[in-house]
Structures are given as structure tokens and as C-alpha cells.
Image (cartoon, rainbow over the protein chains, first blue to last red):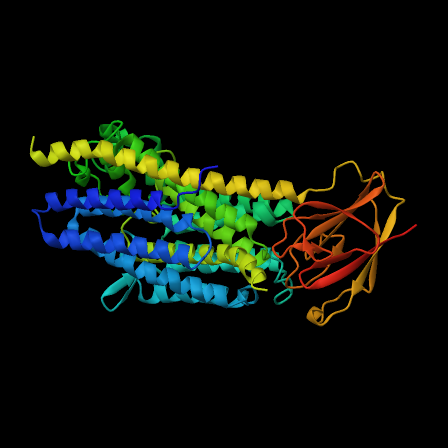
Length: 411
Length: 160
């Protein structure tokens, strides 16, 4: 059998970065700063990968695949707007630090499964703070300013919510709280979160949180009626929302027929479809397309821009990379021995997968569009940092499994 | 058409190639990973299947030898084992569960077939030792043999 070549993917990653940043360097009047920034990001990826391999910190592929996704995303952002791209690289740097911090914290604390109350309370606290001090961007009140940086607390809530659900589904929280059994408590907390998110008009996060809830019930809950009850409740809420909320009516209307009002409401999705169509198989080349016609192209609609300038093959490659990432994450969850870690791994992977499905489905007009970020690819500080943090947790879970062998060997 | 857009169009093919090469190299690595694991799982199933109902009237005894390394492991003085095969390991699903740090999840297996008792290592991390030598796969057991694993020791004795 051929020996495993763990360096080849890393070399290809380097090659992609070098060529990509040389192109961006050309596009920006040969400013040397661009090259420094690119070199910095490349070194960051290599550093993280080498630390993981050398220190035996669990699964080697997670970060590798995520690095490739981030490279594609950053190249696209640098081409759209060099300032945004540079800012994204700074966020990736912070994300790398957060990745190792989360890894260390999660790996060394062993009582995560006992703190369900803390997770629920922190989640509610974040919502209250957002409602009190938040500012409104694009109709959703989900941003908080702290000094010069703005962040979205709802992204952090997602991780807390997964950890909260895991407490129940790993059977480490079985005592009723105020005579309400944990199963009903998870339901109550979920609907409270959804109520808060409705007040903030953050529909994308509602969709993600509720889907995580449904899928976790599907995986773990023995009482099947609870699943059907929640699916029924979701249908009722969706129908009521469709009937009474103008915002949702617009989204669904545009999804059914974007050409009816193409110059106004359907403009965004129509431009996205034009962009995807104009790419062809191999794309028009970085910098040759016209993605600026799509509003919000650097966050939600980055997938359309990738399809335009890297072609259908490029877009498919992004989807395949996501598939590989989720496959590895689910495998980590399956291999985990600790029930709590298993549930957290599955929940976080679901979070990634649902987010990817919702936004890629949205921009290709497969499902009605809701604005959320594409993990690791879209521009967004909170999104990148939180994705890194989730990846750090999954990495720690995989390290538990990997290192157990090592501990035994030190006899 | 400027020089930049020509280079960029050409590079788009290069980028696509690089990304797909990357994907294939990662898939190749993952495939090897799975193959390794599949092999390990195959090794763990040592006792031939179909013994379940066959050798139920053969018994043997595994007698524990006390030593200092054991610490406070919960372990009986002796185990009576059945010829249909028993698995010894740290997992609760094992027939004999020994919750000790150096015992693997499924450590070794003992079974009876066609007039002989067999000992097989199930891919344990610290190995199984028959009379002081580490066994690779399956060895025939004699009455009075010593089985050492993860710092613990059993004496095997056949029951008539």
C-alpha cells in the first residue's frame, strides 16, 4: 500500500494561495502590501496545520478543508474589495487564536455536561442585551457595538444552544426542573429563543436553531410524538408568519417567481441567478466578472460570485469541500465515546450543515432566501470567529479519541 | 482585453485543477484512514462465528494473580468461562469487564473449538502476553498458562 502523503494537500493549498494572491497583487496596481497580507494568511494556515499534526491534536483534515474554503473565500473578497479582504484576514488570524483557545478550554474542562442551566441563562442574557443595546442592520436588530467592533450575539447563542441540548440528549441531565421534565424544558427554551429572535426579526437564525432542534429530536428522542408535535408547531408558525408578515410573503413570492418584480424585490435573486449562469463551466476568471451587481455579495451572496468567477466546477468544489468537512465532523461525533461529546459534535456539525444548506439553497433559488453567512467563506467577523470556535470544539472531541491510545501507550 | 483578464481567464482553469487535486488528495487520505480502521475491525473478530451454540458444555477458569500494579481495580479472584467464547476488555459490553487504565476497550478473547482452547488478541494497545511473550494473533492455550495484559495476570485452567 502507498504511504499516506499528508503533505500533498498542504502543498496544493500553498500553490492556490500563491497564484491567487499574485493575481490579486496584479489587480491592485502591484501594491506590495497585498503580498504581505497573503503571505501572512498562508503562514497562518500552515502554522495551524503543522501544530495539529505535530502535537497530535486529533483529526488532521478538519482544519485543512476549512483552510481551503477560507482561501477561496478570501480570494473572492480581495477581488471584490481589497479592504474587506484584508479585514477578513485579520478576523481569520483572530479566529486561529480562538480556535486553539476553545480547543484548550474544551479539552481540559470535563464538567461541560453539568451546566445546562448556565447555557440557557447565558443565551437568554445575550438576547436581552441585544434587544436593549442592539442596532438595526438590514431590518434585523442583531448587532452589538463594543467600541470599534460590532458582533452578532446570536452566532454565539447557537453554540450555547447546541451545548444546552446536548446536556439533555446525553442523559446527563435527567432531574426535572421546577417539576418540568428536561424534554419539555428543551422545548420551552427553544420556543423562548425563537420568540426573542422574532422580536429581533432574525429569521435566518430562527431557521437554523429550529432545524437543529428538530434534527436533534430526530436523532435522539425516543418519543416520536414529540418530533411530530414540533414539526406541526413549526408548520403552524410558518403558516401564521406567511399570512401576517409582509417580510416573509415577499421572500416566498420572490422565491416562487423572481421575474414578477425583477427591478425591485426580485432584483437580488435575479442578479444572483444571472451571475451563476454567466460563469459557465470554468468561470470567467477572478476579476473578469461583474459580481458587484448583486447586493450583499460579500456576505450572503458570495457563493454566486464564486460560481460566476470560478465556474460551476468551482461552485461544485465548494459544495464538495463542505461535504467532506461535514463527513469528517460526523465521523468525529460517531467515534466519540463520551455521550455528551457525541451530542455536541453532532449538534455543531448540524449547525454548519444547515447553515450551508440554507444559504446555498437560498442563493440558487432552491429554497426561499434567508440571510445567513456561509461558514468560513462569507465575510463577517463573528461568523468566522464562531465557526473557528465550533471547529475547535469538534477538534477537541476528536483529540479525546486520538489521545486515549497515546495515554495507554505510556505504560 | 487587457493582459490581466487573459491571465485571469487562464488561471481560472489552473484554480479549478488545484482545488480538485486538493479534494482528491484529501479523499485519498481519508480512504486510507477508513481502510486502516476496517482492517483493525476485521482483526477484532477472531473467534469463528457459529460457535455460539456449539461449545456451551466446555468450561475453563481464569484465576487472577494478585500483584502490586493492579491498584484498586474491581476484579474477581477467578472467572468461570464458557467455551462459546468470552471477550475481556474495559467496555461494559464485554463478557468480563475490567475497568483498568491499561486494558483496551476490547482486549482479548478466549474460546474453545475442536478440542482446543484458543487465546486471541483483539488489537489491544498494550498487547496480550502468553507466558511472557506477546502474541500477535491466535495461540493455543494449555492448562496452567499465564495470560498477562495491561499489568494484570490470569492463570488459565481447563475444567474437566
